[in-house]
Image 1 (tube, rainbow, N blue to C red):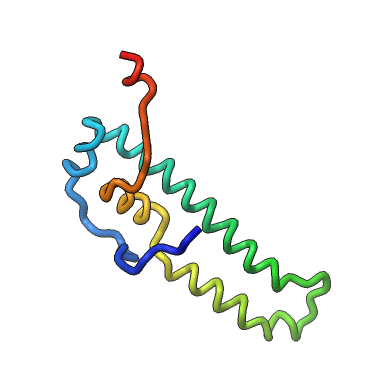
Image 2: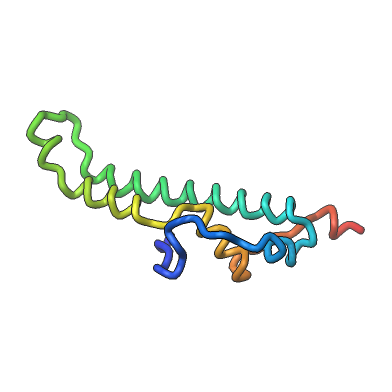
Length: 108
């Protein structure tokens, strides 16, 4: 997964609720879509982080290796500075970057 651009705020901002229900005509449906996308983003970031950190894993940890592993610390700090998955998901939803459909509405 590509890490998000710096255009997404890293802290919570106030949103107009009416913007969220414009695409679905239902605020709850919009929130479910955003929540599911946030879970996808979170899982992808977690897999990516674990993959990068596993490169530094060793079978035996001695005291020197624990204190010397600056690369792991820098990678972890980078991921901590990224916007939260929920903020990314809201931004994607508002900018039409999320594909969603409701099968129950399509049947009618």
